[in-house]
Length: 353
Image (tube, rainbow, N blue to C red; front, side):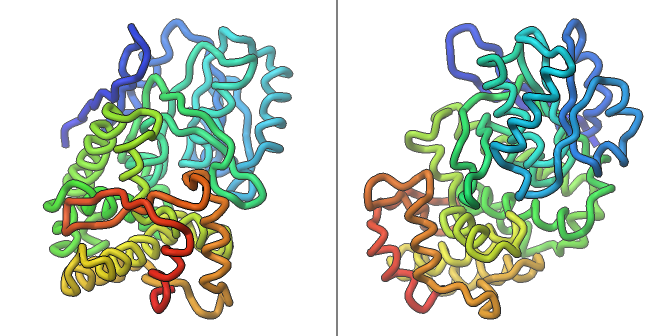
């Protein structure tokens, strides 16, 4: 299996691109950090799984899970950095999944108004295909996803596939939702791969998984290059996420990837209602999501109502006044933004969720 390097352009004259290395990538970390003063941010699971890797650097350990992706956690990390003597010349390295990388990027961008730089070792599939790439860094507030944050790309992202072997099956599965999303946005062949392979095939075939990760990162790199700060085209990457974030907040029971699976099914149904997606193609989207082991709708036992979901969407960071850009599908490999009011979205969700 080859090791692939993808360059993601960064805004600002003279800035070098962000480097994303996929495959056997961990061996490049020392070279990436040469001449720097690194401090690692990680979580207890990663410290236990890779004690030699984490232990060779000064490090800060943050709590596990979305409940720790908060400003309180950020404040605690600031204090630890002060204790370690970190200054503007320090360099932060996030070793972990999407929560660790999001928090690390935010801390690196705000501690002392910004340190010398930061990079990631992305250890989850979700982080490798999406969360750690492209420079969105932020934390949650009162359960609302990533409501406080910055756009600031890392210098590098190392996506070592060997590190995925330590993931629980549920976490590994959750990362595939973002790959399905990428296929629906702009890569029909990538989406159709999920019709021809099972979840077990993806996770047991390193070459197939490698191609899926590379395809997802290449798509995201192209979109970010065109719209780094999400003023237009980058909003396409929110396919399935408008409802996913609401589902996460209102239920508190789904992993991000699981909620994205639900969101993709909702988006397929909305696209069909708008006459943009045929009934057969709508069923194909829902079939793929279900076949990969994701829920295709919110479990009625949660008791969550459509009104609660719409209220959560109303507090989404992508909302502008009483409207939101909802990403819809026009077939496989084609998506676009459709501006609609929250009332219009509410009506479209009737009978869907």
